[in-house]
Length: 321
Ligand code: CUA
Image (cartoon, rainbow, N blue to C red):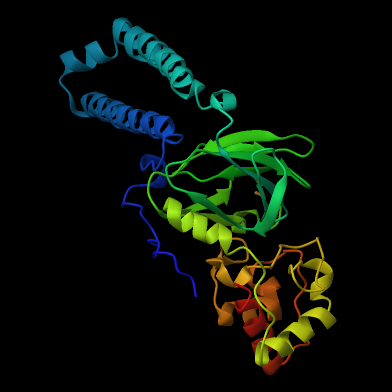
């Protein structure tokens, strides 16, 4: 049904994500990380050499290593000079990452951190909401995207290492962050500030599309047509069993706001805020016992559904494309 070109599941190399920038707003962080890691290895080499001399060196070398001059240079002057240069250079390198470079031409999205998932509100150029989604952020490649980052409850931190540095999400204020992907792909993100309970399971994905595919994706944000067959039975269960009190599915009576918007849940790549692949099996498993999959999350386990009911619910949700 989706006409878009397939998106590579991952464009990442074997490098740790922090050393593998995929856009201009993470590049300075990556440059800094390379310098710090490389410098760290060189200094580690020097320390091991000094240790080797201290243990196995000739008495003359040992005396020089333990002399006052070596202590002053290696133990005082060198760290002071290196750390001062690193501080000034790092501040200069990352200074332009602050939101001062906003031009007004960026695509805009508001992302709100919740315990333990993400509300995603797409905005028009005037900052008005156009539609809602959750736990997945779609962007066009090669275009800066300005994020308004907020928090509903406690402090979270928005971090997609390959696209930008970290930015805290603080209740009562809006922090701004620019991201941009230079190639189509799926970029994984993670809450980077301890926010209680399943903080470590508060992930998300950013999906970067080629511009024409992004336009198609955007045009396909109308609610899916009414469900048929087993999915229709699932829709009835969804509306009558309490699901609709917490979740919105546009185009249906479900208009709850406590949990993630499920209008297009069937098209998402992951489930449970970035922690599971999204398919009928994981959908049914999540409904039956989300507490076993993500202990402490705010959705209760629904042990009352039998296998057939779970299949119907999964059919319904999977059809919400
Ligand atoms: Cu949200 Cu940690």
